[in-house]
Amino acid sequence: MKNKLPVTICFLAFMAVLLFQAGSAAAEYSFSNDADAVERAADSVFMLEVYDAHSNRIAVGSGFVIFQPDLMATNYHVIEDGAYIVAVGDDKDQYMMDEVCVANKKLDLAILRFSPAKAIAPLPYDASDSLKRSQPVVAIGSPAGLKNTVSLGNISAFFERDSKNWIQFTAPISSGSSGGVLLNDQGKVIGITTATYATAQNVNLAVRVSTLVQLYNQWDGRSIRKLGQVTGHGGANFSVSSAPTEATGKVWITKSGKKYHNNPTCSKMKSPVEIDLLEAIENGYEPCGKCYK
Image 1 (spheres, one colour):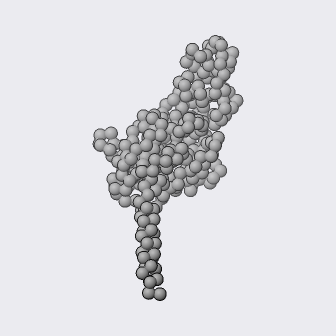
Image 2: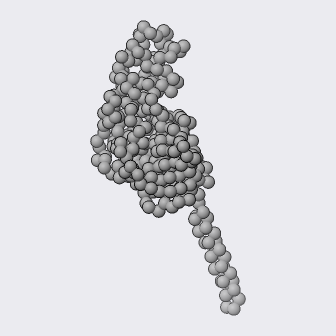
Image 3: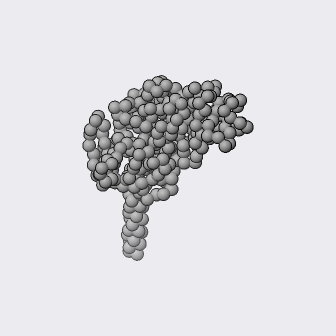
């Protein structure tokens, strides 16, 4: 019995060291240092190309999937003048959207509905008040139209202004990042990247996700309005029978031309080639003035 006691003490000490190391490893997890986790999060973030009723691209912003696999959050000012939106994902999947669940111009937030062709994981969120200055953050968006750019930084400050609870942070963002996602070091959404001070250095702002959660909770889960109705800019001016929300609409082009047409017999076109509407838009074709009066 005398020999067993030291062995037992050593075993317990060994187990204590293992448990301490395991606990330390768990406590030290950092989303910002986990490149694979950041890549997975980027799968739920999209570049938003905003078009008016005449299919002119008028803005580029960002959005991300949250709450449900078919819901996308963004800033209201991203969609403000739009009739429909083309969302472009990391894998080049594209979705046309013109359905709004709920939007609030004063809060500068909107939640859109779309029909993904495959399962997209909604990003988890942290709406608690546990944030502190200096905590690491990750921003994902499309600054200057550069799709799903990742930047790192930290929380600088918190303040309330213009009815919005702001997070000030240092992860670089630019025009096109609006509507993008700000994640904490556990990989949870804490804000919607919204603004930056052009005259200051690295002073960037995100609306707290708790404000977005409140907006989502105001939605009855059923009511949908067309984007043109919400923004007052009318619907997409399509003569084709398919709805703008479908990604399967067909148009016709001349390979050497610059326009797309909804009628293969349009006199403005020679040797018509049928392609997807989204493909035409992505490749820079503009609507034919005769087909889309």
